[in-house]
Length: 158
Figure: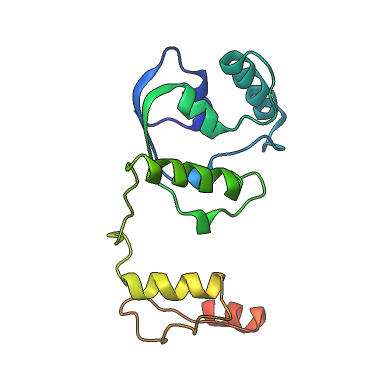
């Protein structure tokens, strides 16, 4: 079964195992995309925890609704203010390391350009003054360009 976090939270019973891809994109209590989802967030939290506890997140729902969980996450990919806070993700990682249940993925099969491309994109999105940029190189079939001017980028796309 493939379920959204709201569907998992509303499901009857307890799952034996939930595999959560993009765990870092689970939501905390925030303004959801619609009023209906704001109400659902409250209703699910009340159902699972007995009160509308604003500290509860969709991560807490998943943990409450399943005996076991596998969380796939990348703390550098959170993009919205409503995404799980970094402190919560850090605590989850620390907990799994302490229990020796933490496994770091070393490669990505879905990115044809490989780890060099991933490292370069990570550096662009989060440059560090203590780290030199990776050597820009040809990434094969990827037409990778950086623009300083949106109008020029638009012209190139057209």
